[in-house]
Length: 320
Image (tube, rainbow, N blue to C red; front, side, top):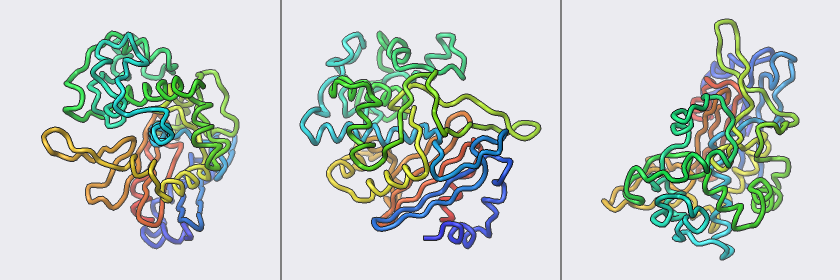
């Protein structure tokens, strides 16, 4: 697939007209089981005219939840983890941990409070880069907002905790566990979870938001992991899209929607969203300075990421 032709044919190129040298960039990928195509325009570092390339690492924000979910289901497949185990097994200080299961974390049904809201109440600045231990301290002792399993509430706390579960089950820090379970195993070497606010991401793109005159550089992504923390390139995204496209027990488990007690079936599955008409599954992401989406259709996976927060990645994928 020629992505430049695909986007241009659907939209006369207008969607990409705002990207080029001297502006933040966008990367678009399409992958089938036999081939892939990558389109990149604009800059990774505007101030120094460093181009955004298919190998540039971009902060993937909530696309990390797809990887975390894959890790969890891989451990389940290997018999090392059970979805109905209460999370008090790993979080004894969590007030309602005995009532919350791994499955409920995956399905966003734990009822736990959103740590991004808690950190503002606790006096953190919105741009503070929290480490995993900070997230634990914020939620320990907090009661659930609703009866676990009865409702759906998209919540970053769930996946930050799942990263800790993966770390404890494997006996490795979560970045190393993600390497072993996904990145190194399936040809995504070089993708990484950044576990420290001080860690330097080599070949990483700066994030930008629109300002009165041009663009303003923002922080280099969150250091919390599982819910975010992921840096990868367009090539990594294409490879992971191909992995999801291949299917198998892990992917089938990820994309399966589970009815609520009242019989309704939410669009949120375990770590991914499913289109209302069932035509694709995947995830969307937005963090200060970055935005991205990945969709897996029947026969093709398409994705886009930008280091410009207001980039129309959804519209670009619609065009593709």
